Length: 332
Image (cartoon, rainbow, N blue to C red; front, top):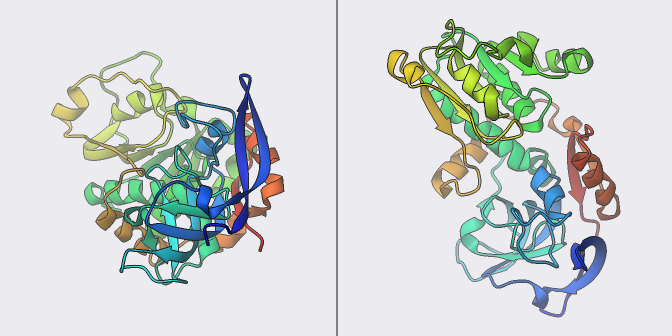
């Protein structure tokens, strides 16, 4: 088995340049781990695109194979919890960052990273969700612990992104009144309304140009995928005993807030970490995605590409072009 050859997309560092190349490797070349998985599907995330151009905040050492998500079957495991041929999902931990990821046909990882695929999802569907869907569901899980569906409108920021899109779908399915904020109202309003949300507003409507300490109560809760000043502004307009989740930093990694929303309105702020999420909660979230929170027409949300087509999709993502959910299918 260690001599088995497979295809992988490798990022090679050459004289301060980063070259993408499809290569053949042996299973024996993979890093240490007690579980080998044959990858059938992976998905494209922004971290993968950053890794492909040498972002050392994502990947320290090259050559490297990106792919922070993977779904496939167990080939071999020394962990008695897993058996050969069992279908599994991997997201988070160090996969695709400094451990060879899902853009290769095989991965070798610690069994503690591996999730048994729940009934109700197939492998392709699990990668339609991937890290983005898992993050969205984790955000919804945290928010809805504090915010009842009858408490009022829930705001989702960054409306055209995958996390915001999937979070909106789940909230609508649960019966919440969802308002989506986006910087692309003119071009994306109809698409966002098709999710079943109550309304779509421009991000300017939620920004506080006067930088007040508090704003009029408006939102029962917020799922923020943007960060930066947007996060600071929406915190000011949360209703009493409401909650905010934050999972992104495309708007910046810093925000300003006074203590007043927290001590006068009892606002709760949840940070969402999908990378090191404990396994018991991780399993619970995947069960929800496979069951009551499963999106209708899930496979219609995705474009399936080959390993050879992935390079163009990464370039488009880095250029800020809309690429939607991209799932990689490893052909036999």
